[in-house]
Length: 138
Ligand code: CMP
Image (cartoon, rainbow, N blue to C red; front, side, top):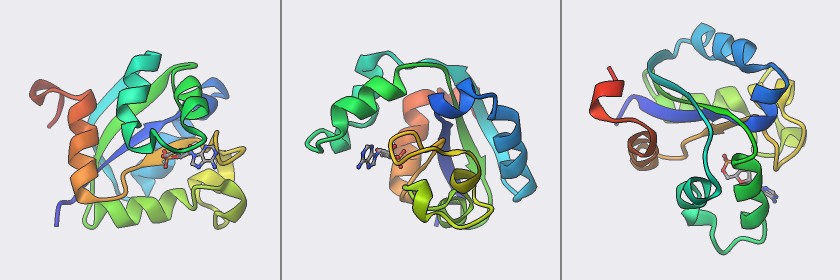
């Protein structure tokens, strides 16, 4: 099992000034940052990143939103990283997220849900590779 996962702090959270608080919660939960980037996706890049959702009705909205403003992308390390990080961020829909989770604290809707967390070790690798070169990770 890999002990790395990939995350993004999404445009709704960066624009509301939640970046520092979210990174703080992630680090206090025991994750160490192995790569970090402050960037903005073009619509083409957001479409490629979320290609797996191409047939979903919300794909267009997702691409527009994820390219609407700056994001933070990061690779995180911790034992059992993928599962533990998904626990820390809470359910995709913040209305269903547990108290104290990042999405419960900072997300406003299922579309603008503050953070992304990889759903498997395989996707964590693919998603990390999308953003970071070998020189940008430790
Ligand atoms: P994330 O887990 O980053 O990956 C897929 C994203 O699609 C998800 O977060 C949400 O931001 C978005 N999403 C999922 N379901 C919906 C939906 N029903 N309507 C709009 N956006 C959605």
